[in-house]
Amino acid sequence: MSANNAFHIAVLAGDGIGPEVMAPALEVLRKVGDKSGLSFRFTEAPAGANNYLATGKSMPDTTIKLCEEADAILLGACGLPSVRYPDNTEIAPQIELRFIFDLYAGVRPARLIPGVPSPIVGADKRGIDLVVIRESTEGLFASMGKGVVTHEDARETMVITRRTSERLFEFSFRLAERRKARGKPGMLTCVDKANVFKAFAFFRGIFDEIEKKHPGVKTDRLYVDACSAMLVKRPWDFDVMVMENMFGDIVSDITASLIGGLGMAPSADIGDKYAVFQPCHGTAPDIMGQGKANPTGMILSAAMMLDWLADKHGVESAAEAGEQIERAVDEIYGGGIKPMEFGGSNGTADITKA
Ligand code: ATP
Ligand code: MG
Image 1: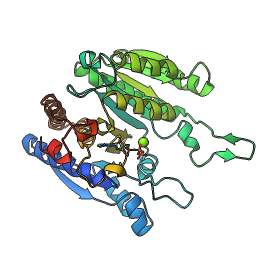
Image 2: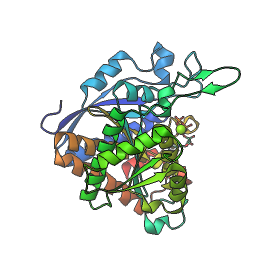
Image 3: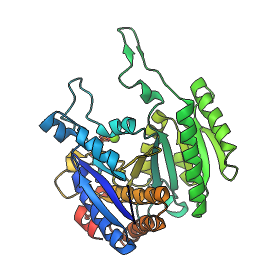
Image 4: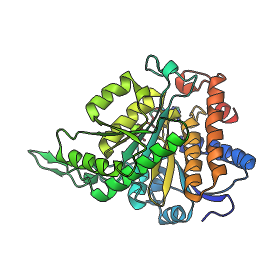
């Protein structure tokens, strides 16, 4: 456990560009820690496709134990196209972690950083600052590995439980309240398909129940199709959005692209006790080892970690340190940093140094 603003962080750098974006994030954490009176102990541990090739384990027991003991978990990216399990599925220990640690809330903020181009007309003036909360342990993904395929048909089952939905919505309302306290709209939109599927009507019904406990939060309900259309027309109208796993998978890829690119987008997978912080992007083998990777999403994930640690342990200086990182990112992009990811000339080292 943490004591006196000292935090023990499990570091799983992973494969591909994972280690290339992890090193900058640790460097930034050390710097901001020195300024804010926070200290970090980083313990690195193997996970991913390279480790699977070397040892036959993509998520060794010793790594899981470290994650259990640490105050938070930082993850780069895992998996490589050429490495698969014998049943031909992808090496994705990040998904295993969600189930092992019951990380039901996938938090995917999409904030347009001034100076970064968005494909949405008007976004530079109106801004984009929203958060997608993707339920991460059930929904259609509960069927993972359990689908039934015959010659004639294929079936997968969606599961939505009261227990997970209640915790998911509690988390979402609390996040909306915390954002409101920071001067953001603090509005929460439930995204589903309640008009067609009973499971989503159930989901929305639980949302309605939890809403009663949070009268200060303005809410909205949208069907996922209408929501998707609105996201590419008026993304600035959204604040916090909460949805089922598969919808969240898709919608969060849309929102990541609204803010300029995969390399910009941070994420967190959060449960009642544990949390994993990692960028939205994958291992990007095409650019690996060339110094081109944009570390911003990883660095912003580290900032989210500070905010979560601050909330969990009541250490206000950690929240301030997280905001300092966000401000620094805003400043460097406002000041003309242009990652190679967007056709600029700045690689990993330039962005980290800036
Ligand atoms: P996964 O299956 O792990 O999600 P993916 O196939 O979705 O992976 P990514 O690895 O996320 O793919 O990357 C897609 C492409 O986007 C990469 O090939 C790379 O060119 C680019 N990209 C992703 N992340 C970054 C980054 N941090 N910096 C620069 N370019 C990136
Ligand atoms: Mg992907």
